[in-house]
Image (tube, rainbow, N blue to C red):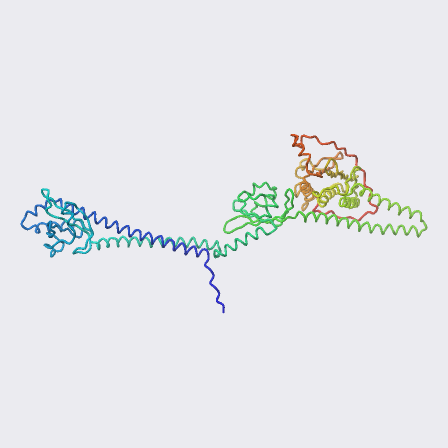
Length: 575
């Protein structure tokens, strides 16, 4: 049976153990240092105290006077004991120059030889030493007594090592009490701090945290979706590579406020919002983003996590699918009408009116062929040609006349790869849908389309005879959500501007003489070499006046031979 290895202690537990050991080591070190220091200071204090006592006794006139008496001990013993008790030393010994004691704390030692060195004192120099005596090992000072310039006696005063040790033990006991209190307080504080750390690290150890960090970094940069994390002050705390690419930000963005990133207003508002946002659609200059945000809350607001998904290609494909669906509906309607007309031809033949049947069928064929020939001859780009044919059928079924300008011409293969077909479908399809919807139901409803290449650029122009755009709405018409047709609309023109921006083009809105709206899109077919040449010549692009453009009156595209059934315009690609 395999015994499972014990799980390593958590990071908080390891830190707690390390901190307790560290505090204990510091306190123990301080205690040892204080003990050694106190011991040395106690011995030095004892030496100074004994020196002061011996010097005072040697300078007292009592000693010389007692030496002149027949029994010096009778005077010196009471005097020495009184001095000993007042000064707190262990002994005060007064002796003759040969070392015979005249006084001693133990009366039995009087008259005996002094235990210790006296030679330096006999030479007239006071000195201190540590020596074993009758009372035990002591720190003592021996001082000479002078009379008429001669050493007539010696005074020894000292404090025993035992008494010094007792004083040190009292100090060490107090020190250990303080050290224990410091250790307890430090341990309690360390426990509180590590309990908080344990909550924040969820009880994981250092290896687990390191592994989680590695996985976190790998996952952060591996996901294709954009991920942005904001702190409580709405600053960028973390951003992955996908988010930097989708938002067009550099690597130095961490730490900056989300309000200072020059993002679209609606997207900035979503990032700064305190409430969650779910699957919101936001447009940048080049992308369609789906944004989800959620606040991070743990007792207090800690920040926001936002995810970004790129829906640009999906939106473009949705527009193409909508156009294809419209073409399918138009073909279905035309197939139904073709069956009706075929029955009419057959009935005319059965009635014997062959010439009228031939004339009816020929007229229908000529009209349908004229429509196809006109569009295909003018627009060699197959995607645009198919789009115009389908939109012409859709406009016709809504009672709107779609016309194509006489000078419209786009040869096949002329458009560069920088202008993908799906962007052209997005631009022209949305502009035509908006124009048809604006003019539908009005008298003499007409939409004019111009599609041609001129002066190194692709020009797409759609004008209508509808009510036009109010002057106050000119700045907001390209914003996402602006619409005069109710909610859940207002994406088409925003997508038009976005597609034009991706191709380095421009979109302008003007009025028509009939009072309708005219949208003009200009897309460069080649890199802006004209602007570079102007810069080299010292003049910006605005300094060169634009080449004159003469726009002939558009001519109507023949109506389709078969009128299809009604088909709804996709609200996702209309204003």
